[in-house]
Image (tube, rainbow, N blue to C red; front, top):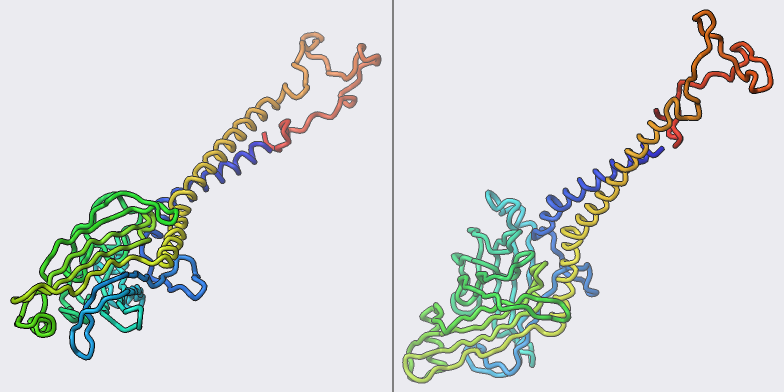
Length: 393
């Protein structure tokens, strides 16, 4: 019985170790990839880990808004909303060659509105390919960026670096992050860790010094005519301090802050502020982002660490127990063999004339005369059984 049980446990242990290795080396890497089927949240915030629009608020902002076809400077609260929409059908159709299976297509839509009346201040749309592992932009000939400001639709844009997500299991190191206004990737520096709603987050900071924006001449002329009397043209400058907090296991944003500033510098007269706004995720977006990142983190931790380690420990213990039972069973079988199951060792056999006397049962010591072999206890079966009842020899 011990031998059979031990063999079964040994097999279970080996199987558990094999499953642990398969989970660690094959299953875990597959789940640390951007999926094709990311979904949007319903009204109740389900399913877990779904995508939500992010909302950032800028209080007391100064901004330019085109009213009745004329650029005007306004002040007040702004709300920036960003929606990420994975494009599974486009991914299946367009991701060919070295992008097949390695990249996904995302569309992103952004709007900035006044909170007092809901009117649009600016908007943009973009489509690009992301690496499924690093979440960095991949080179794709159909990517585009469409803005209602300077530059308009740009099919020649090249997205580079991180955009709306950081890598799974992010490291404490610097990255490249794409800036939409400059239309290129720039360094973003790891700046420490911080607790965001009870979740540890990595903080990254990108500081963009005042830089000239590429602006069509017609737009510069319109700005000069509306905002700088006497000027005929000028330039637009831009600066930004972008701070992004991410949950490191999932690589998801949990908080974003952008301190943006744009100025029109005319060829005659004083500079005019086109934008001075400090956008920060609102509390609802932070809470939802922390929750979503936590769901993703827990799944990755379960599949990538907890499950393989648990299976490995369980498999190792069961394997050792099974091995011990097999050895113990074999020892018991050996101890239960002929000559050790209550059968006395062979004694000197009396002889008569050099020939062995027939064996008898009983004898004088038993109080009755010895009889022929027919008086013996029937001989033991050759199907020896061990003391543990395993039925094996």
